[in-house]
Image (cartoon, rainbow, N blue to C red; front, side, top):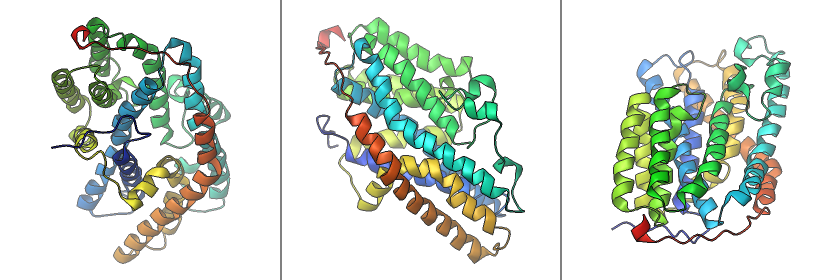
Length: 342
């Protein structure tokens, strides 16, 4: 019998472990490039690591509405909600952009620099403010930033719709489901939120179920619809990762592991920094060390460098941002739910 998550606790322990796994799989996906690893089967295995992004999306689907519900979120708190999110994600994001610019300058000193490592145009850099790059066909300083833009679009949409869902009116909920289930077909571009909406909805449904907003039957049926749409618009490995993520959260909520907890704690910093630390390290040395055993050592070394850099970044930048975000409190809005109204 699964252990029910303690929704009164500050967090669900296994989620932090899942963050550590997600960030690490994305790292190795980026470290093992087809041009460096010539074994096609091995490259294909590591390509699965891209699914780590969708683990993050499902987790956001769980934790963001859960924190809003716990905090008594209402429309009067919209400004505070956005301020909390910006205080949490912007300082590390902006600091990473600065470090990326330094990295681009240093890469010009290396003869083997690739075009992808060159400095983005000033216009594109300015579009990073507000995550506007995809809306104006710009280029991200670091390719991973597209996921931050998708998350930010999700924050805005959820902040506008959640109070309606908390009224307990079925029509609002069903319209919400339709938006998330049909929008992937209207805008099937990975740079925007709609195509990823089913992955977020899987997490939202779980939170709604655990907070008694919906019954288990509704959660199960709509989750199946989410997985069906996910398979239709994305590789099956992403839907599989989403399914396993929500099953692990449900059946092993109290699971904890010291190494994974550590990686989960620094996961945002690790995700941000690995392209300009571990990946850069591997790219530079890959031209010299390309024997089989050297590749293994180099990839492992790149991961270790990424983790160490992320920890330092976490202590200096991310942790203060977390504290700042935590100091912003909602105005309390209390909402009661009656099962017969749901």
